[in-house]
Length: 277
Image (cartoon, one colour):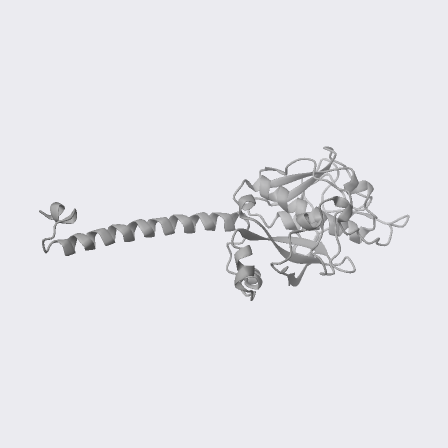
């Protein structure tokens, strides 16, 4: 009798049938909400943003208009690191990328981050670019066993102005930006597909680099939503801000490394750098 009432009877049992249908709709809606929530959490975890610390607070506390907010509905934040004025600290910039990029593989997302670094910091922020002008990412970032391999074009070395501090900022701007992703613990560099023993004469370059939290300034920059991403602002590498020349390495200066001699297995961090003899 109850089945007949549920499908259109005008008897008093109709009320019970309506309640049953409302329960069904409520359960389906709840299931869809849970699925969407877990999907969003997966993206945040990939970005390394599923945290309870203060790192996300600058993003959530932005005051913006309705039109500006709509522009960000299909974007997610990533953390990029550029150099400060005297090449002593890395400055964090929160930039928004397309949700479609964040939903793809970690390798794809890492490649997007590197390209954003190549494009330089957002306008009027006073940060120094860390990647030499003309540098290109030769292949998608490869990730294996928590180590990301970034293959740059020859300009990554040939167009760098040199100087130990500027060299350090270049290396760790990439390392710290990529290790924001939960699947990346270390970063290895290659140039034109080759592993080099040294970068510019100061740092050993044939070992993977670990994150250096000690280099990061506490200041964070959140670009306005009316700004485009660095890649959109700079269509070609020629538009990227050149790296200001730092003091050149003088004869007799020590070369720096955080690893062992060639063939060693240790990795480099900016907080624990040793000197080559």
